[in-house]
Length: 204
Length: 204
DNA sequence: TCAACTGTTCTCCCTATGTTCTCTTGAGTA
DNA sequence: TACTCAAGAGAACATAGGGAGAACAGTTGA
Image 1 (cartoon, rainbow over the protein chains, first blue to last red):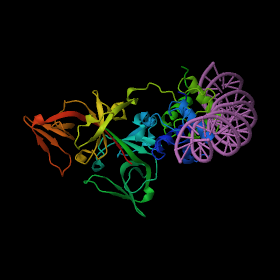
Image 2: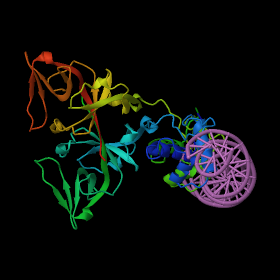
Image 3: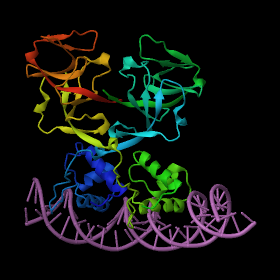
Image 4: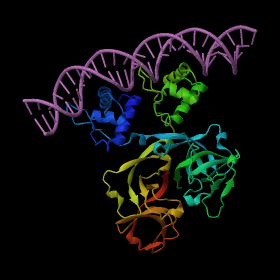
């Protein structure tokens, strides 16, 4: 099968995600409207490329709309290789690792931004279902909400995985372990490296 | 295969690690921007070295972006497609599902025997770090030890995920939730469908 | 039967992107 | 010191890709 262009892939994924709202068999005009394209001729070109690629059924001279041949999400077939940057809840900023190992992670567990993997050390988050030796997928972002579990860097020297809370003038990092206390900081001491988006655990 | 220069290797590993957020088929310009290089001509040289090395598909005069050629990497970089057989800790034997969805799972999370995936329903195992909606990887086996977490079938009608204990004449299925009591059975009533070997969790 | 709708074909124009080439710089080595 | 090679900047060129729009063909339903 010939590779699709970027635009063709976009249109195909759009059809997959929206075929319910589009009534399962949208016309070329319907797809144009839904995607904000004015020209039925242009969309016709794209749809016929999808037909040639075996993703859409040929019209065969009928006016019965677009039928996808399969609606399963092909991206579930991909493994993303994320850097395994170290262990967390014990102190060094993990970017220091020069050539990290990588870990294969199914793409559906990844975020839109760049991600990396850390191995949990200790039991500070045990009441949140995060155990020692779990592999956690962290998405690089600083846009976090209260209640998110984040990787926070304290004083640029120590990284920790905790539940985030920010008030007007304080940052509070909550362990989820009844035997441990929250840690309270001046916000200047803290930067966010990323937030927890997925977890992998292997039982031995 | 021609030896890559250091820079070419860097670019290749960058593409491997970032193809997800680059949208799978980045243009030469896209890769330049992501890597902070200004010159499309320079990146073109590097990409064509990777093409010559057999790591990137040739453009063949098309403007379809950069496609990595899948290489056979170490085995833990394989994605295994396991049947997603249903949800657990609520009643029906899950083999009943005729054409299950599949889930891509990294091979390093799989066992030697046949495996399948269940979605956890409820909080009976919350104190073992197993939460509602977690995806659990179950290896088909009946060789279990006391302390393992198993999928047990009760009276051939109801499947449950619990910690296993067997004495001379009793089977005890332990929830891991302080508010729930252990369940005690005659061994004939119980068969083991498999044991828990891995867990995946996605935070939304 | 006929109008409406929708698939099809085609032309035109513009943009994005691959390609080629020259030049400069810096590192490594003989 | 001189030479080689890798790397990158940048410019210019060619064309694939994308979209608008018009006109036509023929299916569909009233």
